[in-house]
Length: 186
Image (tube, rainbow, N blue to C red; front, side, top):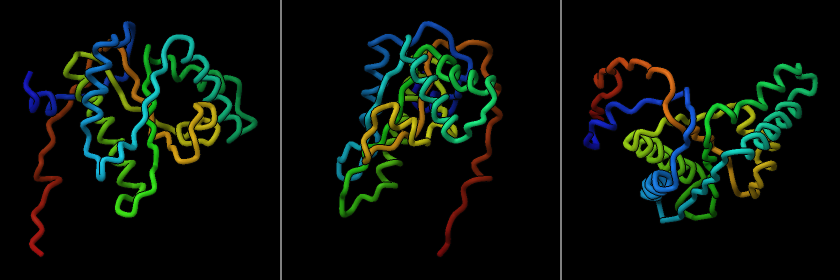
């Protein structure tokens, strides 16, 4: 498939099974991430890979964050939070390392990490790896940042869940560009 075809067809894959992408596939995805737009070449991105038993530890971090927000959380809800990282064999934490710069505000650095994440997703699709970018309330909770060892200048922007596509892909209806693009005439 050529690049434009891949961009036009890429979809998120919520059902993911073993095996996870291998080291060579991950290297290709991270190389794509490092080509994201980056004002002043700050390289504000950092990625953590989470697999195997570390997914269970991340589930504990999620449960702790959820309980910090709502101490009377029902046991079945706690179990659900603990199971979130188990929905894929590999997760990639997307971290923005905000750097002080007179011309590059934090929002531009966050957008750069978002562009890097999109490059990972596009590369995963091109390689036949299923992937989905996930966030949620626990993603932004200070307990999650603490559990992942983030420093004060770092922000967690989500997780890309990866694995072998399971189930059938959602049928995506084509969108009409005219519904989203107009010409500004001043």
